[in-house]
Length: 283
Image (cartoon, rainbow, N blue to C red):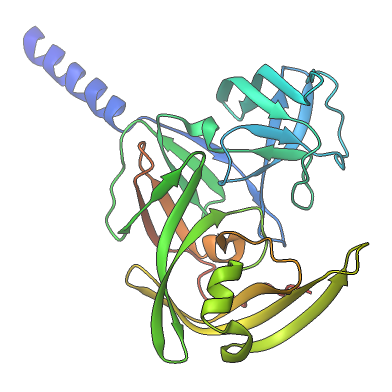
């Protein structure tokens, strides 16, 4: 009898370990940015924006809260910091100083907070979930990730003028809009002529060179086996062309619940409650 009780006890301990998880609540702003309350070095209470396109953390020069206990060197870098995110303690964190961030945030934090773990961005429950092992994936579809340094890329299909064109996109949760195409893709596929342009702005630098931002509508976009219609899509024109990578940004990221494996080689997605929301307007 005692042996049987021990077996049952070990079984439930093993089951608990298999599904061990932690959660971090977040707030989604009207600009589609994820904000998490953080305590840094047991002293500084900050609102940090989650930036999936970085690993470390940073502080904004426009912050409204004090960060006096993050000590930077002459290169504006601070090492060996401690960040508390709900019940999760993130140690040996590197902060960069004077990096702009999203609305309502004092700084940013990246995927290093979930290093070595699978994690979910659950927009339905407004929380991150961190796992020791992948959870039940029923209802999710898998998509391949292409990690490069601290950044994660996906491939998706763009239907332009009736033609399907594959493009690689950086997951970019700091940019509030939907798609932002790199300069080469915009030029090669004549987006200026083939997309319906809804907003256009021209800015000039001190040398008189112009950068033109254009916002248009992509009729159809496919990620995995999921199709989105009339997607907000931007690109740059003019003399200054510095957009080297295309973004799959916050307004599209929030339309799915995401689970990332620990190796960051595969993501699993399914539509969130925001899937059919109107698209964010870039003014």
